[in-house]
Amino acid sequence: MSSLPAPSPPVTLETQPFWDAAAAGRLVLPRCDACTTVIWYPRAFCPACGSTAVCWIDAAGTGTVYSCTVVRKGQGAYREAAPYVVAYVELDEGPRMMTNVVGCDPDAVSIGMRVEVTFDATDKGTALPRFRPVGS
Amino acid sequence: MSIRGTAFVAGAFEHPRREIPDRTIPQIHGEVAMGALADAGLTLADVDGYFCAGDAPGLGGMSMAEYLGLHVRHIDATETGGSSYVVHVGHAAQAIAAGKCSVALITLAGNPRSGGFEGGGRAFASAPEGGFETVWGPTIVANYALAAQRHMYEFGTTSAQLAEIKVAAAAHAQHNPNAMLPRPVTIEEVLESPMVADPLHRLDCCVITDGGGALVVVSPEVARDLDRSCVKVLGAGEAVKHTDNGRVDLTYTGAVWSGPRAFEEAGVTPGDIDYASIYDSFTITVLETIEDLGFCEKGKGGAFVADGGLQSPNGRLPFNTDGGGLCNNHPANRGGMTKVIEAVRQLRDEAHPAVQVPDCQLAVAHGTGGSLATRMGSATLVLGREDA
Image (cartoon, rainbow over all chains, first blue to last red; front, side, top):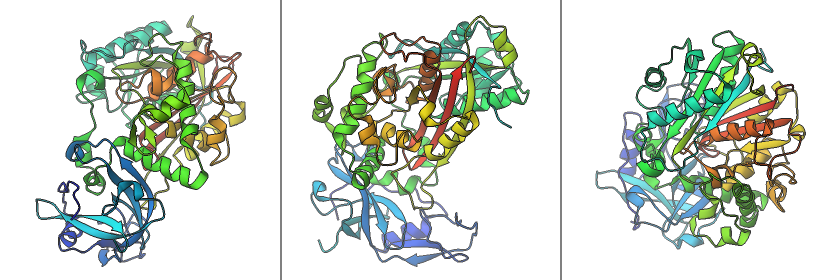
C-alpha cells in the first residue's frame, strides 16, 4: 500500500471486470477477439476494428515510464497528497495508461524507468493499480 | 467547397473586465453580443445565425437565443473546449457559404474567477475515460506537464525556453490596460516562481479570469454595406486528437492536422503569416503548437521562441499581442475567442501601436481545447485583410 489517497473509481457495466480483477490483485486488459488489438482505456468495443467481441487477458504487470510529473499542488481527493507522481506507463502489452508511480521519492521517477504494478485498496471494495520501480 | 473569401469578421468585442462578480453569465453573453454587434454596425435583429459552446448556460444555444431575443435560422453549439470559438468562425463561414445564414453571432462568457473554478467534474464523471484518469489525481496542470516532460525528453527543450513564451506575452501585456497581469517578467522570474507540476511553474500557467467575447461573421454582401473594415476568412481547419486507444503521443497536438487544412484552404504557407494568435493555456501549449503548425521543424520550438522570437514587432513570429491567456485574459477558462479577437485587431491595425505588426496582411488564430495532446480540439483559422 502506498500512502496516496485511493478514491473509488466509477464502475460501469463495461469496466466492472477490470475493477473486479484489480480488487483481486490482477491487472487485466481488454483484447479484441477479432483483431487481437489490446484496448485501453477498457471498453466493450474495439476502436481498431469496431468489434464488440472483447475478452480480458492478464497483463504482465510491468512497463516503462513514458512521461511523469510531480504534482506539487493537488486537488479534490488529492488536495493534501502533494507531492505525488502522475505518469503514463507504457505497459509491455503496448498501451500507455495514466497511473501513479509510488514506492520511491517522487523526484527519483524518470522517463524510461522500469516499473511494476501494485494495488491500493479503495474504501469501496475496489483497488487502484499503481506502479513502483521494479524490484523496490 | 472552399470557404475562402465566403465570409468576413465584421465585429469583435472582448469584455474589458477580468473579474465580474456583479453579473450573471447570461448577462455577460449579452454584453459581449451587443459589443460585437455595435463594432460591426449591426443590431440583434440582423442576426440570423447563432454559435455558442459549453459555457452557454441552460440548454446552450436555445437558452441563449431566447435570452438574447434572437430569431435565427441556423444554430451551432459545437463544443471542443477552448477551441470552440475558433471552430465556430469556420462553421459560420460554411453556413454563410451554403446560404444558411448571413449574420452569425458567436458568444463566450464565464466567471471562473469570481464564481469558482468550473473543473467540469460532473461531466467528467460520466465520461467513458473518467475512471481511468481522474482516480490518479491528474490536475489540469499535470496533464500539460506530462506533455512538457516528454517534449523535453525527446527534443531537449528547456524550462528557460518555455519561459521565453511567458516573457513575450508579458512584454505585450504591459501595453494592454485591461490585462490581468500587465507587468513584464524575466526568464529568471518564471523559473523562480513556484513549481505547480514539474516542469511547469506558476508563471508557465495562464490566468483565470471572468469575462467573455463575441464575434460577428457576415456574408460578403453584408460586409460590403458596412462602414467597418472587415477581416476576410481565408481558411479553416479543425481536428480532434485523442489518446488513440492508449497509444497516445504527447509530443504533438491536433494542430498537425488542423493547420495544414487551414493553410491549404487559404492557399498560403506558414512562412506567409505576419501575426499568430496561438492558444496559450500553458507555455508548452504554445511551443508544441508552433511546431505543429509548421512555423518551425518538430522539436525545434525551443530555439524558435528563444531570444524574443515571439515578441512583436521584431520577433520571428509576433504572437498574442494582447498578452494572451498567459497575461491578459482567459475568460471562462476558454481562450479561443480572444485569440480570434486579437488577430482581427492586428488585421485592422487596431492593436496597441507598440505591438502592432506593421503592414499586417495575414494572420493565424489557433485554438486548443481540452487537454494538450491527449483529448483535444484543435482549430486553425487563416485570416486576411478585407482586400486579401
